[in-house]
Image (tube, each protein chain N blue to C red):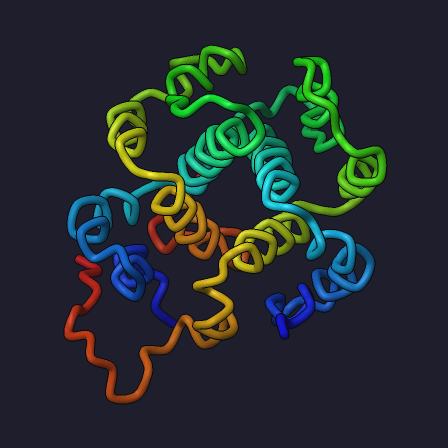
Length: 131
Length: 111
């Protein structure tokens, strides 16, 4: 049985709170809804980085999508729009959790914490090159 | 904690991807990673929700009105990603997403 979305968020009480609030809905998304959410959140975060003169908004990203003629479930739209009340750190946490949760492969692998540590006796001999 | 993108790629099916793109992805700024996630997820969403069998990053960028100057030198990489299947590109989105843990702070100084 998959873990709740909050399982994948660690080290941030604020992000954990966010997962408590939105986790149930977000983790029950279909693939296309997840991709839309990832697109909208990453788009807003991108705006906050490279378009300093405009107010980044997840809701605006969704409305732009709807303007293009693609319908969005009303509940999903409202949940994503509510994320505009979250700060950048929270949105990053939710984005990474959403992406991680969407991966069956990741789910089998374990938590985000586990990803950071090579398994004991790992068959991999590849080492990262930080140079 | 390892956060080298090549490490994540090599942990999965994607050793060839790690060999080809790992170092390139590792050098990216947070903004570049977000832009790739945004474009790749947008392309995957189009493929998931429409009947089209292929949809390129260039088409998505044009349809979304994204300034080509913003995409800049990522375009050749995106064109290579166009050659992958959806599953592989989902893996790349996942790897990019994992690299943005903790706000995507880079040891090399992001924007």
